[in-house]
Image (cartoon, rainbow, N blue to C red; front, side, top):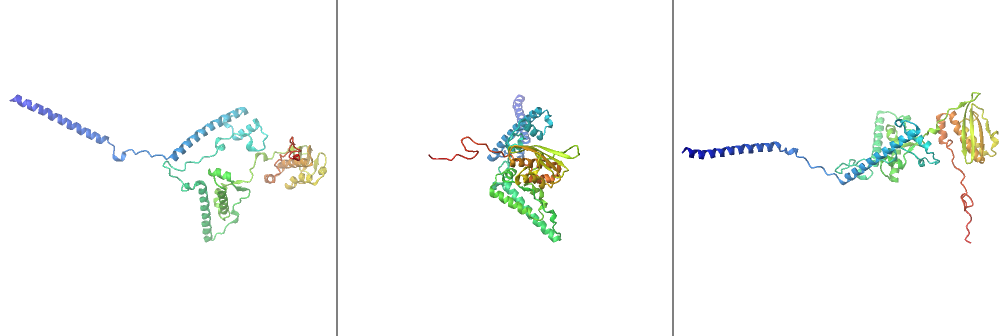
Length: 390
């Protein structure tokens, strides 16, 4: 009887123990799944899709960055070579040193500066590129994007805003009873608006002739307002000087002779085939000597006027003495050479304002024109033989 009970109870106990273990294991698995399963809010979101326009822009930007890096490396290598050739320290070699080194090592007889050899940083040589105007999904940053000329219309929008602000400020001054001070009016003399290519480079956009005319007309309207001086920085951002000062116009210091008079000598006064040099002495009595003769060296009135014009223009007549030696060429070319030599030497005896006036009048600009040679098969430099049919 006991055996039968054991044979029945023992398998039953083992079965119950197995089921209990199974329940414990299954409950542990459930808890583990609950612990390891992320919360609904922490499910990783799918990546945003990049538009085709953004992909194309990123590829172009990457290519441009690699290109600019290569050009920068080449520029630094060339800069070091130039510094070593000139015996200078490459680390302290400035852009002015680079320009002077190229002018010394690679002399050019070309009169046009843009045609001469030069070496500048890649940022100044290659045109700027527009930054991204839209995000990864293709949505534009600027509300004027779909005009096709976002930067241009943004500038025009700023100009109109400044005009409205000037009107509001003027109304407020009138209500307060404050009168406008005319001395605060903007002085735009000596400056001009940026030309169309320069404006396109500033905006990094291509604009039409009508767009440029509208820009100039709107800026002129802003400038004539009484309180436009409040936006002086914005206005002068789009203006440039009529003519830039150059280093060559810095006057040399005069020397002194045995009598204590200051003098300056200008060598290689050139005009066509005339060659000469001019010496100016100050103070003087207005004596003019040309090849040992006085002003009557030139038989015609035009030659005399050419020589006297720099002295009359700078108010230095009868204040300095002129000694000139000239040879070659004709009366007109000799007078032109002496005129340039006098004007070039007077820089040492006048102030900077007068030098600027002389430069604007064209007195300091050398005339490089020469006689054009005769061509074979022709009667002269330009003249052709008379053509006859038979």
